[in-house]
Image (cartoon, rainbow, N blue to C red; front, side):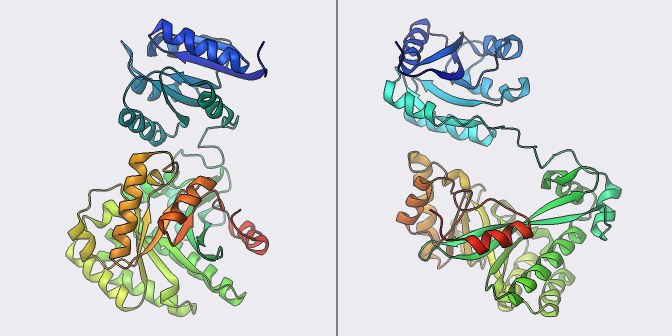
Length: 403
């Protein structure tokens, strides 16, 4: 008899009948009773669409005829699947790691990957990590774009539409103290509530209003930093800036003037530029970035590892901070490929005398690894989610450490 009566429903997707039977027996031993089967990706999609049961977990083989596991992962959300995935395959370790990375890039909740046949204890551990939470990333932050008129009204600050700032703390790994925050742009709509960046930033770029929007977000951020300083909080703060904005002299002057107007020191402001933008930087932008450094603004290269940079280009740009993308941080303790990129990025930043920030630290295992490898700062859900100012103030008052 099963030792436990697990209520999660599981769909096994594998073209190998023997493998399906073995895995089903292991699940039965673990106490899972709600088990469905499909022998290829197309059959799995039909079951997800038509079965009365709502599947919580898919255990998925990669190599199948008609529709393989990789193709299936790209379509499951389209039929309403909001559960978790476990990869179970006879492919080599590198193939499994690549499939895991692909699934995560598609915002799928992947519990892990196992080689065939499944080890009972290892499969049990992965299944125990299942959390029945909504995977709808649009909840709270809908992604349907706003209208152009809403964007224009918000930039000039109407009461019903305007940019809204969220803040995510950055933690000093040596002291455990909150030393900085990243400013993240959201949108407040009186009709729709808080909206995510996908609803307004691409639109601003498309219609040529990105500079005006950036100015408004920067102004709000600097005012907020000034208020924190008056409360005795000695924080630095990061603000995301499109690299194209630096090609305009007036924009750089605006950054300097606003900081001076509100009494915020330039070395308390970190201007973040994403790597893919930075690597296509024009001479005019490089001159502007050099000018901002000479005025003691800090510069950060964001999402490092996701672009096509060369070491020579990175050397020539005056960044003071390197932020390693979450794809190479979260889960790197058990992902050899991600760990290799993480270690290489840390060593590179260290040799270039840059501060190192690990993004996407979501578990104690993530924290322990980046601590071991020598990161200076961490940012991620293990410590804190992004939050509006009022919530951030309460968080700061109660902060006692990441554990």
